[in-house]
Length: 172
View 1: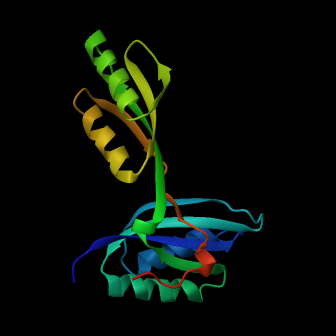
View 2: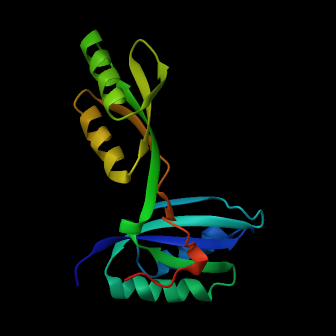
């Protein structure tokens, strides 16, 4: 079976150690987590975790079944990426050794709808938000003048329309 990228959404109890137990379960099954993000939900005692992994469909379904067995997991599902909004944020520190490089970076930031959040004589930090593909495209462009540092948040995702993670059945 061929590997593809899956976005797994989880609602979990807001307790110490939950993220560790979940990521450890992925590790035990030999899954490499490509990105992971966790944050508050509309319910203060729950946390949304979004994990991006590469694998085959059978293995990911097995991973979902194992996740459902964890006591702190309230809901888990694979999101249909065509019916979801996926966003990521990156801070990219780019070398700007001369005025042409600085001008190029400012133009790229404008084209990618990024924000310049810091400027120094040697570098510019750009904040870019969008799909993981958009972030990757910006980073590749920035590499032409020199990426000095990069920080990415990982993917955050929600299904489009009225359905929520807990109302979805397994996608696919």
